[in-house]
Image 1 (cartoon, helix red, strand yellow):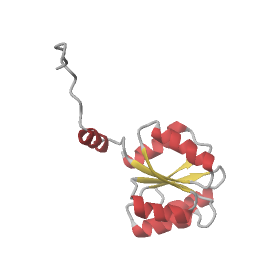
Image 2 (tube, helix red, strand yellow):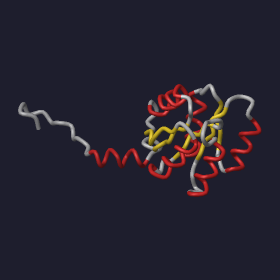
Image 3 (tube, helix red, strand yellow):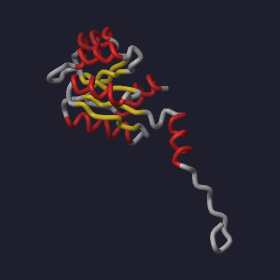
Length: 145
């Protein structure tokens, strides 16, 4: 109660709020992998505005493999064409370490053969650049839902 006799709304503990987040799709952790800063920022904005947490950002496949091991995200978005290690090789490495890993490939138009190779390597879905928020969220929700 407040000093003037009004009833104060009950405050929720952080633990309960976090538990509620974990029980829904909101709060799921996503690793974003793309060598282009603009694409990472675009995905990050789409995902965070819809309640997802960014577990990390990788600029190439090698970084993605390392960050996956250290952050254990619920989902990975993976560009196909990147320096040092391409997305398809990174998918293979991540799937070798964690066969249950959920990976969405990010591709430019006209990369159908590479998408098929990525799916064969273990990617579960793909989204096309330039990113359309509804398509990104549909794909993420399909894998995390």
